[in-house]
Length: 341
Ligand SMILES: [Zn+2]
Image (cartoon, rainbow, N blue to C red; front, side, top):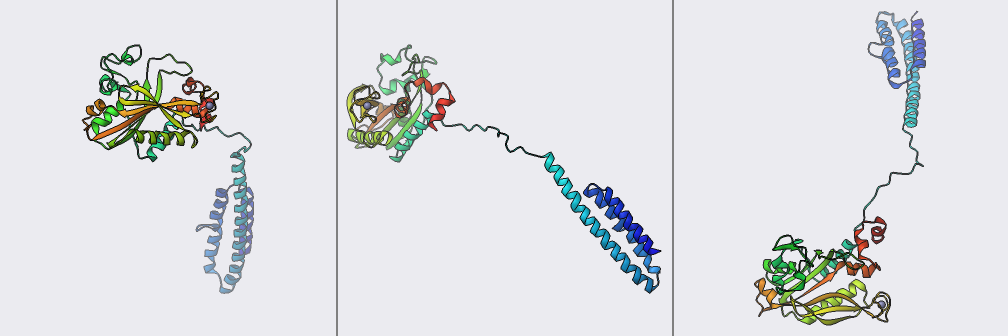
């Protein structure tokens, strides 16, 4: 009688598990038969009223039935779990042959790279990097730099004026004035930045361009300090073999003033396309800071002297990379810009 009940439960287990297609359905079968209020549990509870002999026999059969049902459940669980996984995997299939989404990683602009390289070299010589605004006062851009009132670069045809006494700086030199007014010697700074001049863009001119300014003011600074620092810069920027020479020149804010040439890094001075056959390449302007400029900053000109220099970043980038048209830097053509990364 009881064994019939047990085999009925066993059959029910088989039939229901046959139909179950998920882990939750399988678990429902488990609860219905083996749970606290499950059918098998109820039958086991009724064993209390049996004779000890019957109870022993029935208990054995019931445990066997329970073990069998548990075995069936475990197998079914594995089965539906595998099926569920297979279903999910097929739904989430990734086509590994599909081309990936293109992530565009930018590159630094060749002008930025050149400024970084120039800065790195001067920083290794103890210079720090400073900056000034692109909109300047006429005083800082011209007067304080000892430019005569009739200096040609002051003309409206050469300079972008904002108002009567402000303009877009035509050079990075006003940063010299700002530094001298803010600090006392010793001063050892470079100042990279953007400059503006009224120019029609062509292969070598751009109304917007970059300079790196340099200023060193201290006791006992002489022209030989200037030559040593700038010669060292040229060698580290263009190669240890380059030689430099200084030609007298005129700038209002330095006295004496000079232009520095370096021997052609391409041909070594024999003459080629880069140096236009001359063997030398003009690289920067420099000189000993004019006492009038130092006085603007309240520097004691009996005690201190200094040197200053300025170089065109585009020109250096063009020389180093063999770029023959300055306009290429500003066309935002990634095919050009990505060549320098
Ligand atoms: Zn050459």
